[in-house]
Each structure stands twice: as C-alpha cells, then as structure tokens.
Amino acid sequence: MSNYDDFLNNKPRKSAQGKKKGSSRDMVWNILTVVVLLMMLCSCWVIYTVYANPYSAINPFKPNTPIPPTITPTWTPLVFPPTWTPEPTLLPTETSTPRPTYTLEPTYTPFSLATATPNASATAVIPPTRTPKPTGLPYGVTVTAVDSTTYRADSSCNTLYVAGQAIDNKKNPMLGYIVKLGGNVPGKTFDSTSMTGIASTYGQSGFEFDLGIPPVASKNTLWVQMFDQSNAPLSDKIYLTTYSDCAKNLIYIRFTQK
Image (cartoon, rainbow, N blue to C red):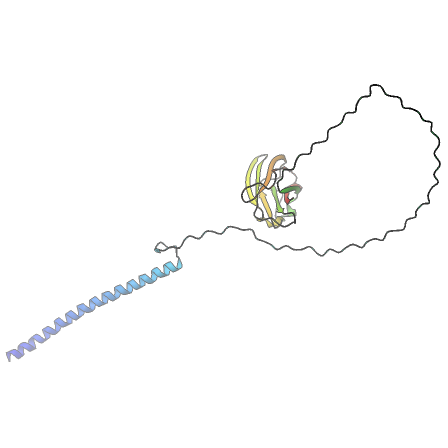
C-alpha cells in the first residue's frame, strides 16, 4: 500500500511539471511566430516603399537619375495658300497706223573746215564708285517697326519688343537657330539669347526679346545677330533703330537665306 500511495502522491506532481514544460515550449513558438510576422510586415513595407519610390534611401539598387529631355520647338504643319486663279487676258485693241509722211529732199549745206582749238584741255575721267564686297554669310536681314498688337493682341505700349523669324530660300521655317541681342538703349544694357521656333506668334520659326522697358528712341546702339548651334555666325551684326512711338514699339526682324 505504501508504494501505491507513493505512486498516487507523485503522479499529480509529475503532471504539473509536464504542463510547465509544455507551456514554456508554447511560449517560445509564440514568440518566434510574432517575430516572423513582424519580419514579414517589415518586408512588405520595404517592398512597397521601393516600388512606390525607386529613389528611396532604403533601396540599395537605385536606378540612374533620368536625364531631362532637351526642349525642342513644336512643329506646326505648313498650310498651303488658296489656289491661284489666273486673271483674264485682255485682247489687244486695234490701233490705227498713220500713213507715211512725205520726206523732203535734203538741201545743200556748204562744207566748212573746223578750226583747231589751241591748248585744248583733256577732260578728267571720274573713277567708278567702289562697291563693297558681300560678306558671304548665308542669311540676309530685313527690319521693320510695327505696333506690337499686330502680332500680340495682349501687349500694350508699355513694352518695347525685338522679335521676328528665320526662313530659308524656299520660305521654310528654320528651327533651333540661336539669336543674340546686345548693346544698349538709354537707361539699359542688354546681352540676351533666344532661339528660333519658341515664339510661334511671329511664325513657326519665331523668336522674341521682351526688353521690359517703355518704347525709347535710339539709333545704332542695339544689335541682333543669328548663329547656328555651333555658335558660328549666319548673319551680319544688324544695328537697330528704336522709336518712342507706340505705333513702332515692336522691331520685327526677318532672317532670310540668300
């Protein structure tokens, strides 16, 4: 009986120890499960952050920074003029031809010898006027002064403009050429650069300089010149005349290929 009592007395004690060991083991697995879940959540957050912003600081393999595209002028298709209608040809009118007139016979004119003029002086020969040689640059320039509202309805007399366009010898627009403005007018000095094709208000190859001052009179102190993309000159340096008249506050320039 003592052995049986000992067995009965020790059995509950062993069961409590087994439960304690099982509880500890479950605790360890629960902790590992929580850790794995946290790691999965962190991985999902990292993947979403990198997907939403490849340039994030947590991305070890950042893509190369894209190079911004070069601004190119917008091309607008040419519009052909309306069909030319020939004018009617006028028929020639009949004209009366007068009858031939009677020609009188020549009268006799006595012959006389011309007397020599003593010490006749030789006539001075005027040398021909020297014509300057052409510069050889491929573009010529025409300049006119007009009211800025001719091209820009939103402009006013408060601003002086220098603008225009460039075309080839077939009247096609020349895009992407450099136009420089330099010199000065009373009260302001300029050193600015524009490009053909960025101001379509003046044509498909239009360019514009907004001088930011009211119209002012000047002569041969402000100039413009056109260059190609390698900065080689395509025209002469053209000196401009500006006016204080509101009706001439836009100096319009056309570069035309020779």
